[in-house]
Image 1 (cartoon, rainbow, N blue to C red):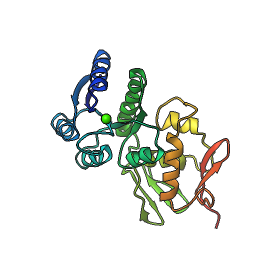
Image 2: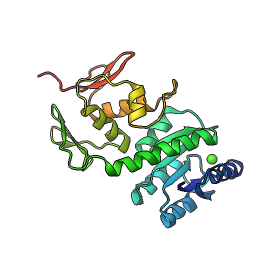
Image 3: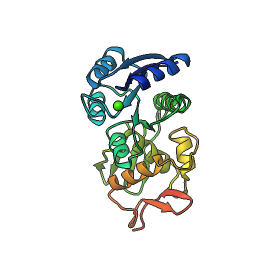
Image 4: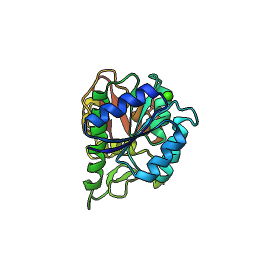
Length: 231
Ligand code: CA
């Protein structure tokens, strides 16, 4: 069971989610506006936040930035449509995962469990582990800092997790299915763009493109690998 703050302006969705999550043993507090939701999050320090992106008083992505300024609480955003640009923006603004409406309570609950499990893992991982080095890329799991040529990479939480996973197995081709299972702790759903979205952003932050990769190489139909570029 988890303490949850739900921010959702649609009365019917809000009521249905409060009921469904409460039945699953979660302690849910719901807000109909973004600013009230932010107050609840600050007051309660919940284990998890579920945030509707289409709110009457503030854009969900703006609210997410405000939440991130005060809290590292895991956030799952709910988007009304499968809009890649919007999803990328919110993941980049610090969301841990997203669900596309309409979604079932079972689906949301599975995502919640994955995000919460991941949060627990973060605390235990990386104790006393030396930084991973792949060419000029250095990834320090303990301090959660990655540098390229000594330059700090500004990575989201998930981008960092993906980079750690790949940097720990340089030269090994890792499938999307494996990344989804090991980094997101989710089963593979064929249409899921989560991994691709994060890989494309990670690639951009490494300063390269899919057409001219240096470190992050896509192996078509198989997966990706991280390798040190040849001199
Ligand atoms: Ca809404």
